[in-house]
Image (cartoon, rainbow, N blue to C red; front, side):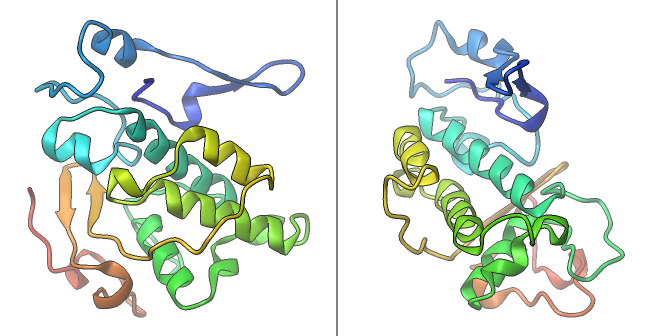
Length: 200
C-alpha cells in the first residue's frame, strides 16, 4: 500500500514512465497488518478513501480510490476540491458533479474541453468510467489495480459503474451527502448552502 496517491507523488522519467514517489505514509504502516485499524490517518484531502477517514482502516482498495481521483483530475483538467468556483459547471467537489453528469448520460461533459478534440470519445468515456469505478464508496465494489490497468488498456470490459455518492471530502472534514446523484441539486448556484450537511 502507498496510502498517499496524488498527482504530486506520480513522477515521470525521461521515457515518460510513471514512478510513484513518497512512501512516507506506507512506511509508517509497514509494521501493521494490512487491514489493521490505526488512529493516525495520514494522507491528502481529496484523495483519501472514505473508509480510512471514517474508520481508520487502510487496505489496498484505498490506493484504488486515490488513483480514481487522480484519473478524474486528468480527464477533467481540474482539481477535485476547489474552495470557490465562479463557473457553475465547476462544482466545488468535482467527483460529485462527475457522478451527476454520468447519471444523466452526459459523461462526455466530464472531459476537459481543451482535450476534447485530442481524445477519442470511446477512450475518454472508458477512462471516466474506470475512474468512477475506482471511487466507489464501498471498497468491495472497487476493482483491483490489475483490473484497472486492463480496463484502461482496453483488455477488460468496463461496465457502467453504480452512480451513487454518499460522502464528499472537504479540507475540514467529511460532509455527509445523501445520494448526490439523485438528491443533491447541482443547480445554477451550487454552493455549500445547497448541501444538507453535517461534519462527521
